[in-house]
Length: 453
Image (cartoon, rainbow, N blue to C red; front, side, top):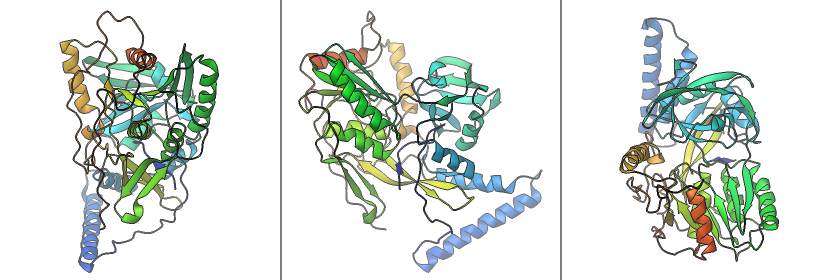
């Protein structure tokens, strides 16, 4: 069974092995617990019956029940939800890395659709959609308060057809953007030589990522003369498949643990070690770039390379999604359930749930005035895993650092295009990209053993 590490998305997902979940099973506990469940089911049936008989207009019973199911799952955490048969089919067909859509990763917050990250080179990216934007209407019709899956459905449509989304952005008047739907073929890995430093950007983790990374590593070694190191760019990478994050990490680590997952039962716990792979040379330093849009599988890679002293992490604190979702098919014609089944931990035993990965070197992307810092603080409080409704607590008590101006940010006179990348390259050339150096984060205590229900 594939494990999924990402919040609900537009046009991205995974294939899932069929699982025989065909009937409702009462908890295997004391008879009083079973009686309590039956009592609540009876209450639900009674409410539905009275609503059908007395509501001001007739309504579609199936849609009401689906909304109730999504309400139940959404009350558990922001990443659990019901997928109707069409949604489930879409999810299964998008794992290949080619699909129709806008090219944005989204989640729900306070009734709004919030952008986690646009995918490089997609219609949404070209239209200027940014991480942290809120989408409030489609073609002039409000989507505020709609279940996330319903809002996502409205954004889908025929390739070549346009739609207009209303965008709410910090300190900007709401504005409309018209986007034309396309077949999305995201460029999952980008590569270039910056003179004597290699650069590889990974934009998402799907079935295409590992092969593309292998080609990129080979290319960057050929193109970069006298290579002094590598910048691995995971900024605004919203994550994807757990398996892909393990494979990617294996390209830079000599075996050993990459991540562990721990669920409700001891039997749900698992440790994932590096797999055999053609690796990037051990003697070349690596700087990993992250920011608030780096989530899930991207955080697994950054956390593994940081904990294993293979790379220095630079940028700003990551999103903080430290949970794993499993997609459980419900039988023919019933769709599937996406359920949070475990937390994950870095090799040092850190849970980053809500807290995120803290960079070894904190570097901001732009110069910030005092007014900019205040706006950034307001945005940071709203754009992270910890800010999502019903987000899981960090079981180690780790908290996200309060919003603040980065320790290093460009001056007002900076004329370059990417200050964080410039600083990463400079760190490598200065011979200071050494794990455990100045500003390195302290390792948290190991996670407690999973509780047995």
